[in-house]
Amino acid sequence: MKDIDAIAVLQDPVRRRLYEYVAAQGREVGRNEAAEAAGVARTLAAHHLDKLTEAGLLESGSRRLTGRSGPGAGRPAKVYTRSPAERSVSLPARDYRTAAELLAEAAEQAGLDAALCAAARRRGEALRGPGAGPCGSLREAVEMLAARGYEPHLEGAGVAEEPSGDARAASVVLRMRNCPFHAVAERFPPLVCGMNLALLEGFLGTDGPVRARMDARPGECCVVVQDSKSNDR
Amino acid sequence: MTASAPAAHLAQLNVATLRHPLDDPRIAPFVELIDPVNASADGAPGFVWRLTEDGEADATGLRPAGEDVIVTLSVWETREALWEFVYRSGHLEAMRRRRDWFERHVEAHLVLWWIPAGHLPTIGEALERLADLRADGPSPHAFTFVSSYTAAEAAGHPRPACVPSEARTASPVEPAVAS
Image (cartoon, rainbow over all chains, first blue to last red; front, top):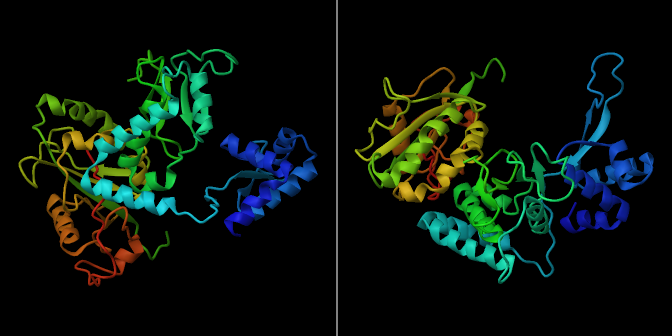
């Protein structure tokens, strides 16, 4: 399916809610759970989840959600996750990815890491806005980073107990499920991940209550944000 | 893995030219990372072996490729396991700062090749692979992350391989494995 056709599948508001819910979980989601989240009946949710899978926006598998196995464990349930495939449409046609890869290749070859990071830090500061102080809390960082497509979430003790206000517990870190620079970062990890860290340092500030640092893990953005007072490095 | 295909492991050699001696304060942040990064390698999924100097915890004292050149030689179960360690662990932070500590290499400084599981590569063997990569570009018996080959492809091309030079172009931009 062409990208434009796959994206058009999301025009249906129920489908879009289901897609956004599954994508936001970062794990396998069953039909019942998705139906409940989207506020529709299970059969309708199942129909739309399968349409999204046909379009290549979701991937499906089957799991025994009860955790039991063997006879009596019941039929495996169908579960869904977001597809890792990237979809984009640009009208008129543009190809910034090839430009980015070529520029990254040249920067890597020339050893321009420092200049790239300086530019990224300036851009981060500009994105924060003129005169804006450093990011004030992890909660605020979640909002700022969500707006830029990083899919942030808080991880660690104390998150659930603090539905509002600052998540101050030192063990709480903000992690991000999405790397906005994924394809280029996979090709030139130290260069592009370093650029991303510098961008986020500029964006969130380095002299405020929260700070960004590198803590790479498989399958996620390599940067974490945490309380500046945390002793963790 | 079928019975007819013997298990293969991936060997890796990296050479890095120090900008300052290891006891120079400017290189101290790198030196501080050596033990924790090596410990995370030892515990990483798919890690098999890494070269160490006799009686030492690492290989930084060995200088087989030059007085100021430190080497990393290690063995991994798969290319993916090595990639995840190099780029998706605490090692990435060391890579990010590589320009502060190491000279930029014009020639290839990382080489990968397949070995029979159980074989421990020697430094001599490893430096030969690097020389092959530098001389002929990536081939099934000496390649890089960007230009990698499978173990099956390598099995069909014992060294020295006869790979037409136009079949693959050398990647001049392979990032370094920094510790």
